Image 1 (cartoon, rainbow, N blue to C red):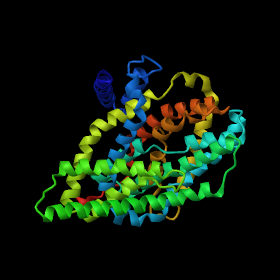
Image 2: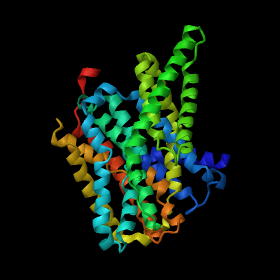
Image 3: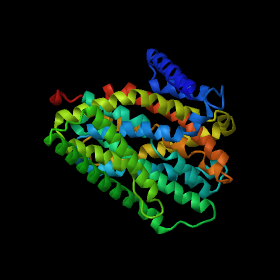
Image 4: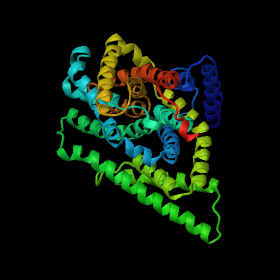
Length: 402
């Protein structure tokens, strides 16, 4: 395992640096590293690290979500409440609709299988989007109209919405029936996740304040370890309550970080955010290299031109969904175009659930995985490049915040 970690860090960082040098996003170098080192090309990564790949990717995702929560300004988010809520479900719904309408003709699958494929493909990648929105918030691009905050909030909820729909459609594809309670689980999951995170964040802030009042100073580095440990517990609670009540662990983590920011002094929350930013330097490499390693490049040969065509049809529908969410807002056409670009990349959810239909023995499993792989290879670099190359041209930097 140590040799694999060495390859992940050294080759991943080297490839990221090369991409940065030629004006490409670092993520592309990391994804390519994972694909090349992974089991489907050179097979240089230890089976022991691949067996815990999903857990390592989740830890990395939690780190950037904690940093995001500690950077999120709740007052700014309130300004864009309705569009942020709509961004969490409307674009994904439009994309799923595109698959249901067109995939039977383009890819030769039935409607239920098309819905399963749409649910796999429908999620935006928080691993690509969230770090970039945090960077925009720190550099004050678009913050006057709360654009990065809106995109980040929408992207965080979007995954939950899509994964719940995915589990419902998979049940239908297996010959089961979709129950109304499965769809009701979506808002329940969001509300309970936010509530659980808020209570946990409030409790943590009281714990830190009480320790300080009794002269038991908790160093910021120790606070990071405690917050990270509690985040793992929140994700565990989601798993423990599965089948009883639906709770979003990811939203609970973001909500906890937001509450900690609200209840802590500005200096403390800033220091915690900086420390999670440093942790992200290592976590980012692990996340994207292992996402790349989950990609079976051979399936792209099976998918072919029809799959690429279907991906782009779905992206057009998705873009229309984003535009619908932004109706009635103060955003100008350039800012709306940026929101469309920011909602293109896919990676994390597709890598996590793309192979599930195949593993379950569904007839559409092979083609779903093929299209998921292609979507990662096409949209992750396209979205990352698009965001990095366009934000200075499409967004206004807020001079009022320093």
